[in-house]
Image (tube, rainbow, N blue to C red; front, side):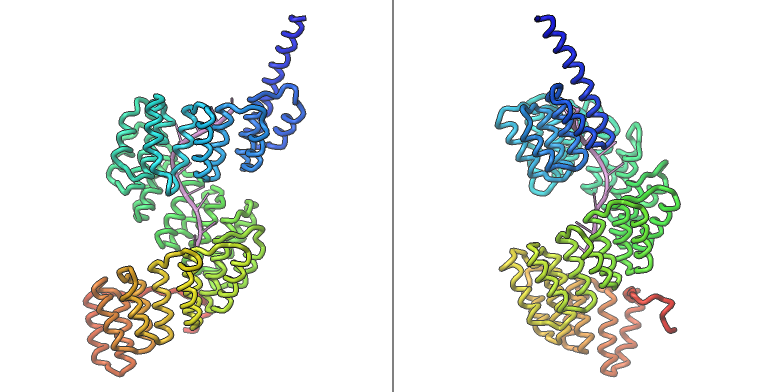
Length: 527
DNA sequence: CTAGGGTTAG
């Protein structure tokens, strides 16, 4: 009888092994349905490992809700189950849940492993949680996990986010075993903190370099506003993948080099590397940046042809591109077609109306957004206030400006003051505009003063214009707006001698005219 | 069965 029972257990355990191997194979190849079937149809040889594998399967297929459900239903949970769940929350960027669950798991007495710390430390990059790195580091040392390469590499990243270059270096130096990932973390950390020389030196000294090392370097230059250096590095790369192309394209876009971004996007297509959502999204932003509806439409077609799933991020970029290229109707159509809308997509439509000078529509859209239960943020108010400015809606603008902090808890930033200065300025209320600048809790910047100068130009107001010009001169003595606006005012008043004098000064100082771009296609222009 | 380093809309 006992022998019989043992034989049964043996069969059962070997069939468990087989089932688990099958489940894992399905999970690895992204076949969640098949894994689920295997799990469901073999209840007798299901064990904790099978449950954990299914949990992992849900997470790898971005089914975090399902994973939570499964986690709750499990007959028992071990540290692997917890680690898997934590990794799931990290994957979707929910640092708060990672921290919460980690605390809960410790409270009920589950002993964390190296894997736990690796996951938690790498998850807390979000603002508000960085300070936990030091506490976690302490616990890591206490449990003697600090010699683990994974844990130490995560710590390097954590200290990078915390902005502590000394600690970052120390963790790296104390590692007994380093690999290419640890070196890459060091480079990224230094780059994030703006330590360019240290990063470059580390890159030169590292024993081996892979595509990630190169991409980190390129990305570092991009973040430090050195797009040309980034490109130089990009050109030297022995191989490139979607990541590297996307970093460089978005790098140009972030640094205002829209044409370069689009040219590189074209080279990428020629290279045969397939873009992903991020790449397309960056390309669309570049189109939006240089108001190129023509190329924007082509990118749109490219997205449809690629067959990529249209996620919220990509669709929002599309709405934004159409809005900024002046095709408000297409922007709204793309927006309406979105199965789920978020704050950013709503903002893009409001911004589209505002830029098109349809102030009333922008305000209507804002009301609609509130009805859908979306809370506005500071970007929403930038669009709203600029909509009021362009539509001459002074009272409405004042109302929104005063309500943003009172009703929505959003502190006005300098951008909002710039909008208000513009609003008053366009309406000819230059006294109010000047008063606002003097009373605001910021030092005026180029944008604010530029708005005031422009307003003085529109209304040919020499008195306020001189004040504005003087303030601007203090900030940036060769800003082109000073000279172009003053010369306009003098020109309007017929004081041509002053204009000639100003233009001479302008030329001597090397001041350039500001660049402008238009939605009108060059071929439609009458020369 | 679980883990580290590179991208992501205004």
